[in-house]
Length: 393
Image 1 (cartoon, rainbow, N blue to C red):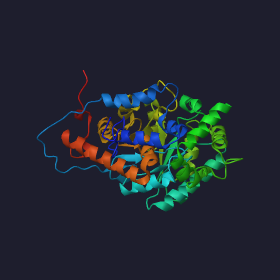
Image 2 (image 1 turned 60 degrees about the horizontal axis):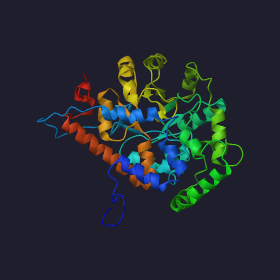
Image 3 (image 1 turned 180 degrees about the vertical axis):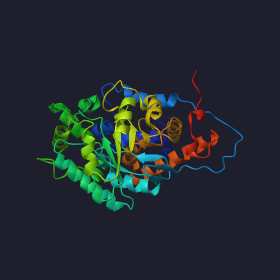
Image 4 (image 1 turned 120 degrees about the horizontal axis):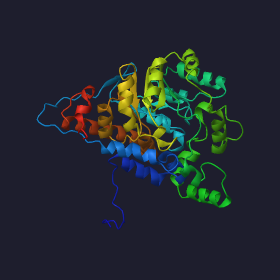
């Protein structure tokens, strides 16, 4: 018990992404926190993303001149101040008032891209208008190709330089937390009551987000969702639009519609990476959807080296999954990634403290990156190689 009579440590100021996770848990209704925080099935892959990163040891080196350190990288023809991208997070505007706009402004402040999700609450036009740097745009190819064409045209109109095509969502994975808390599926009367009580016990969220933030506008798809503007109607429409018949041959159609850089997100196998390179994409994101799709698949840390070996000299290899610190970024760059996408990290931060929270998380990760580089004897992120890691027997 601390001097204020509380049973838990006094949290005066968040110091890490994990601190922001705890603040987001307190601030958000349970179903929304679990939507950010949860994974598929028993969440084994989601846990492995973090555990496999944590198991990698950095090789500490001393007595080297590390006074000047450089974190800038070029990714997909774009100069980034840090090897980071704010990943697309669906329904982000449910976590804070106009959350995608707040996150995009924070990203611009730190010289890194923000990637707008197809299923964002804020539209791509709103995000682009709030910043001087156009966002990247994440896309799902839908059954109704006219909807896809319209989204691509809108992204091109605001100047999005990179299209991130998510390819690991042919069907939606089973996320048991969402079922247990009534986010999806049939909701019995008692569960509806519990959900209502949960909202009542989070008055700040109700005031700032539910009432003032227009969280059910469904941004990019506002005029597409039939019926009432409710989460259930939106989810039903989106689930019906995911197209499990999409194949490699559909990439040619996407290329015809899109003038900029094309990245495939959801690559976890070296053979798929080679196919992507053969099809002429500009980059890939090694990703298992944050452990939210198929459980019991490899962590992205485990999958990354073979994929880099297969195609790292042919296209830009990015990675996501379990990245919670600048130390994690150093490890993944040492394994061959050009940059890391972070999703949950900014979602926790924006839920807890809005734009200031996202800025603080980016500043923290930047500082952690600098410290890890200095103490491993590296002055430029381009020089991070497996030699910076402790070799396993």
